[in-house]
Length: 230
Image 1 (tube, one colour):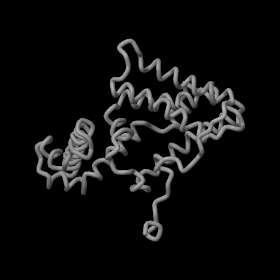
Image 2 (spheres, rainbow, N blue to C red):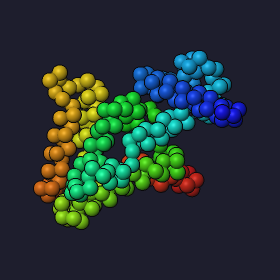
Image 3 (cartoon, rainbow, N blue to C red):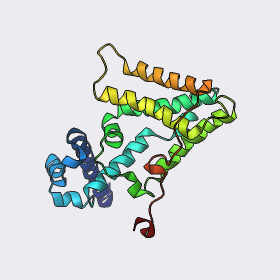
Image 4 (cartoon, one colour):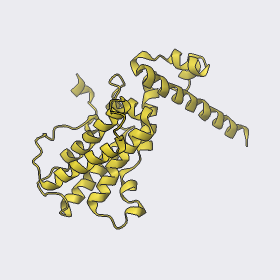
């Protein structure tokens, strides 16, 4: 291994150590309560060394959010898994949303940081940086629309609102599990499967959804221009 390769490897190792320490501290103490100095102390580096990798604490969060979205994965890859080659469109949708629940279960720190901590900076500030996350969300809506077009869901259904309903249901189970609000006899995986099945059954039945489409989440919103912001 050459000197340049070794330097790059060592730098990436330090960057990873910073992110891992920050993730643990942000989840344990809340983003608002963690300073660059506290992160530096955790890995026994100086604050100046941290700043040579990340200009601000916000940038550390954005890097963690990027990691989290990539761990969550691409909905198209989930839906097009060879194991689902003969599956219906609705079964592919089920797999996509189940992956969201699995992410909350398998990567609880990332999930808590991205979806629960209200003090983290809004990712809409980094609109271009998170273009891939918006694309993943669009793929989910398109997958639901494919169910509608195939007659597996009612023609009157709004795919965007259906996506929100499915996500909110699974988010609730994830929060109960992370907050240890389930009884010792409740299995969160089975409860999540029940919520997913019930929501899909309700959508298939043609139940009228009352939620307005609105603007969606921050990922959907275009960044403000200087004129709009003023």
